[in-house]
Length: 352
Image 1 (cartoon, rainbow, N blue to C red):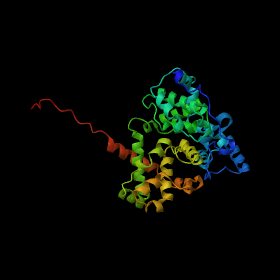
Image 2 (image 1 turned 180 degrees about the horizontal axis):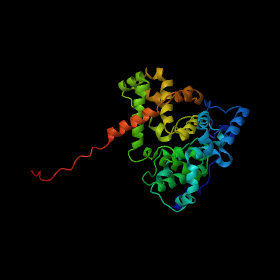
Image 3 (image 1 turned 90 degrees about the horizontal axis):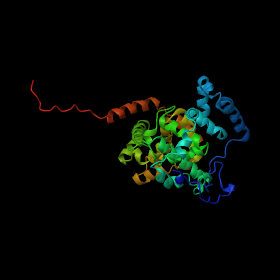
Image 4 (image 1 turned 180 degrees about the vertical axis):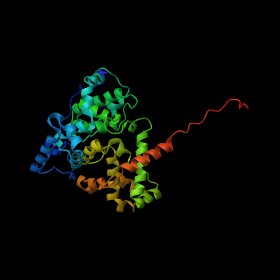
């Protein structure tokens, strides 16, 4: 619906560049986010990555097949920011989807209508409100965010639009075009490379419920003392971890940490969300086990700044081995929740 597109309003004033960090967010007084590697070191990393991916990604698949262990190691160290958008498209499979579906995105944006349009417009200003790209009311960032979310709500009417999707799309739009962001969202939710994640946003949030079940067990198994304390204080993961999975740490976590998590998430899958969650709890373990309910809830939603340093947190996350256990817990969850099919009652109870 063309009249619903947000593209005909006066933009607001832009903040001074001096007040922005290197990612485009308004600087906070106590913001100690790293300003990157030394120039020489960063240039060497960029050269290595350019060699891996080739011109426009032409060498990527061949390199991954030959040296997947090198790709994994370098991805965990962080993808160079100048190449992040392209690499995310390559590792997610979204570049292939884009090339196989020319003109589809434009069709969805311009000619299709969505029942979610008003909900999307209402929520847009809540997505990264401190970032310069999304700050202007009805500006280019908010317009792009609306277009991608509206297009997906038409493309996948079973999911439609759910508020948490805005943070995924908002993060993607900082590194790629609308059309590229749309197909990366499709790749994630439909499962181009890893398991489909659309269950995060379907009615009842079925995949969120599964992830929370798995995470609850992992906490109790890896940190039994903390797990017991959570049980005594009647704390369960739905009280603090739902947004971790729904937005893949892009909501309320430092942006430089979210980017590093997304680098690994797109290459290795959702298990990194479990690992980072466990790492946060392990890092703060000794403090958490002493807190009563109210302070515990606050602490689980407001981790200390030193716990959110990627160079501290991610090595702890990588130390957790969860792949096999996640598969076992998924089978346990599916078995627990499968509907028991009752045999149809016979009419009349005829005697033989």
